[in-house]
Every structure is written in C-alpha cells, then in structure tokens.
Length: 116
Image 1 (cartoon, rainbow, N blue to C red):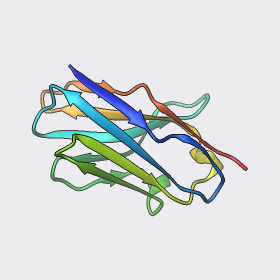
Image 2: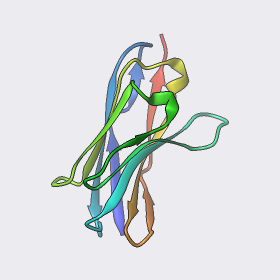
Image 3: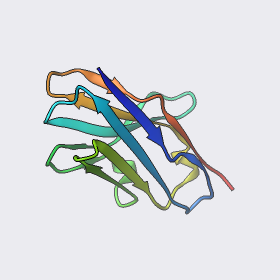
Image 4: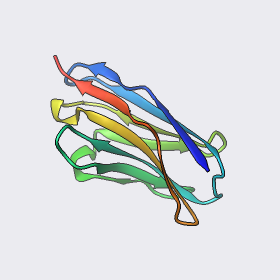
C-alpha cells in the first residue's frame, strides 16, 4: 500500500502563486510516476503534470509555462509550483503515484481556489 498526503492548497488571487506538495509513503517502487490531476466542479478529472523517476516532466497544454512539477526522490515527495494562476485553475488537485507494477494510488485532494 501507498499513502499520499497533499498540502499547500488555498485561496489565491488571479495572477498569484501557490506551491502544492505531496509526500508518499509505503510500498513505493524504485521507478514510478508521480503527478498531479485536478477536478473542477462538474468536470472530469484531468492530468495536470507528471514526472517519472529520473525522467522528464510532461504537462497538460493548459499549464505549460505557468506550472512546474518537480520531485525529491529521497523524500518521495512531488511538488507543483503554480504561477500566474487563473480563475479557471480552481479545482481540487489530487496527487497520484503509479507504481512499476501498475498499481495506481491517489491522495485525498487539496482545494485550490483562484478568485479576487
């Protein structure tokens, strides 16, 4: 089993920044993907960004140039730096870990609200 604990959500004004963190613990494979998804009210969950162990990050087009994903493998932690936030970025952000054996794990989510 893998546990994921997110932190860093909150209320921010348009144009502002937030940094999300997600710490993983448990049976984590040496190679894995860690990433962030989001779900806005009335919409499906969508990929924001993900990054494999020792690999290159991939981003959804709607966050390219604004968000940066990074990871600290020693801490089993993934971060999402979100800049130039827009009201349409308002959503619950979920941390995800995909293990080498194909098992998929989710955090409980953290709410990001972008509003003036």
